Length: 394
Length: 229
Image (cartoon, rainbow over all chains, first blue to last red; front, side, top):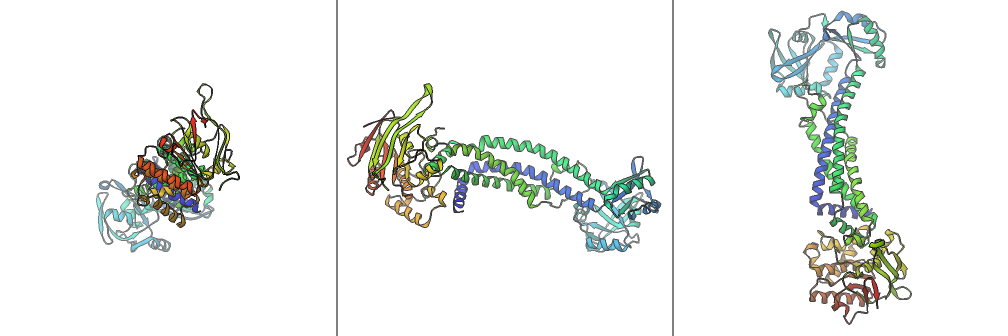
């Protein structure tokens, strides 16, 4: 232990003595780590959002298509669906997107039955401030906290939106929070009556039908039975949605990762060629060390620590910069690549989904190859006769 | 620390050959020598005669083509690399002309370098280093960087480093090279004092002031890698 501490101290001193080389390697490492970390953090955060979002979806969502586009569905369709074995609940839902041209973004307007006890209980859990909207069609809304912050709304503020040929006045009575950033940045909750008026959904119709099953794993069987009852329906399976999101972000993240992998390989080749090669000065130093009684293993351990320090010194700022880039600056450039250049909500601030494991993987991915690449030339030098190293004879 | 027969440094038929075929060249050829303990010997000869190679072979820093080296009566030639490193750490102090000190380190840091693989300098080591620096008139340079030291000061520093490990044998390559007369006198004084304390010294030189000094115990003359008495 004492030997290692002394060698670490020597290695740190060596890194400091070769400050120019240390900083240039650390900078290059930071750049590579930043690119890798950004893709990983963004992919993981989006995957987490999608996973949480999918987890809250009903087991099956039934939509009616007209001319290939979702159309309103009659609430009468709920009755035969409820008789299918395994179906626990069938709920017609009123929701939709409201495009605001001045903001170039959509809000998601969701109608909630605020008179139902279970809805009141669920909403109270996420309500951060204010109260729930009344079901009277009074235009009371509860807004996600990110969206409220983006619009600069406080509780009690009113906003007037154009609806058809007239306008609708909405009063914010509460703020809700959610683990899913997509929702707090996008969703406005209001009574079903208000939602019908706002979205122009006539009574007796709904946007879609949510179905809960006693055994979600048997969603495919239930979906087949529903399709027999409603041949024109599109039935969305929650598990399939989750898998699709995963696949989408895995594919996009994987493509970015593959592109960056070539950058990493290029860096390693450069590092091998330029930075990690043992120059005449270092060769002479190894010669001195061996001449005064250092073993090859002592030289290699010192070199290992020195390059590990440089590796961590470079990789950690890269990881921190990537964290700030993704979660504070919202990953300009990269976010578009992974999200597909779609403008689905006005202000998305992703919740960090970074764990120690990811950071360790990133460190291993960058630091270990770098340290390994730098050890080989050091080993080649350290196994030579010290006399040759001292005199520059190789 | 002397071996049974009193010989501290011994070479038997030592040969170092570089290259093969037409490019074959002997740096040292069939050299045998024996230096008794507590003596100060000189290897003299013109540049390129193989003096430094001979010292490298004796210090276990170069693997010989054939022949054997014995230090304190023990053969070191066929020892494994890590054991030869231990010999250099504890048995023989090497003071080489080039790069004897690590640049961009202070003199103090350089002195304690051999101790790093053993866990670094202890308080006793620091006291001993302080005393040696004092003795060699180098105390004021302890925190000076190597680049700030003159050639003579570097030579003395390298000697102090060897002494810190209590090496009974000192091998010095051109210890007076590029030194002025005053520094030559000072280094010589130091080396003779070490000899008088019981250490065995072998220095290579082409400096006649050193080779012909009356207090030197023996001179070996090397020409084209071959020893001529």
